[in-house]
Length: 461
Image: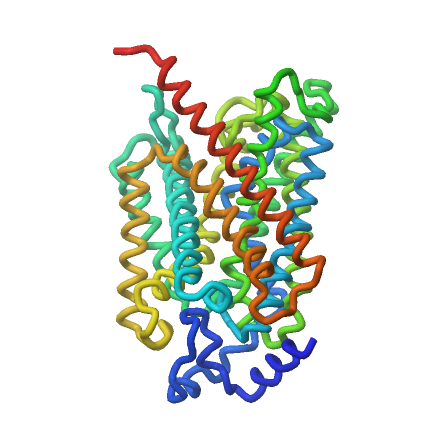
């Protein structure tokens, strides 16, 4: 298409390098152009790994539980359908971005809906990514140092290996992880600089799949597990409504729209973006289907909402303790490497929201360092002092992730400020908005009912 050709031409001439940074929806001064020379040149493989890492975060551990709700057949079909819808929405988003000559998600949203639309998107991305960073930090703390729930202490990896020490405590572990891992990785200004850690992150996710598959196959051959249920167990109206609550979980699992512009801006050839998206989604879908299938096969109807908790007990096979530790450590390392990719997108949007008229963040080291330290400190504080925030995440996952992934791209297509939308775009846009809004309302209502019902039935002191 001509917009793509124009963008490639502009890349070769370095004439819009100031716009290539996704920090601002408006052009920077021409004096900044020379400082961005050579920002392009990211490899196809690096782009695939970075996008895959932004997809495969903490959501992978919730997918086997969706199989418990939907059954194996509909569950796998929903994963594949969500991957297809994600590809469609990203293609739509990038097509309208090029028509608007916008090089950021907030830029194309601002082109369609003005300053209000741009700010709404930035706030949603910030909320979505910040809660993700807190979740990652909490899980890393739980895995390494353990946690106490309902008066029962679950020891972490370090405590299990070395006993209770001052340096195995939760606060110290989180602080050390932030200083030694999160901060150095968050210091990179280009997302392509994270391509090697992203590749390691994807590899660690594959390690989890391989271990889970191996255990499930061994137990299947031993006859200690049976084939998983293929269809949902629908017994009443409540069970029907519960089927829709998995949609926000699946949307969150494929939520990566906040990184596509940064990755596209750094690619040498813009025509590689669509193959990058497709390859990444095929890779992630394969990991998701394998995780869901073997996780549900292994634990059946005992599969917990976070399957990592299932690996906190005896698996009934030799070397069970070693395998449990390997799964938990690999997953903690995986999340440590996902953290900087999600952090990168959040920092961009925080800066765009607070300093919309300032020069690009890449050119202002003081602002870059200040925002980074403030965000890292806020995530560490929340993870240390607000450990039980999963209900809030369920509500926000049904709103911000759904908005970023479906509602905003579909709204841009329906608004169609440049008159390029096809009839197919409008049909898909309306369908995505209806699906997103309906599933969010059902999920929020179900979560609210669960919270209030649990409060009303809990014994009074």
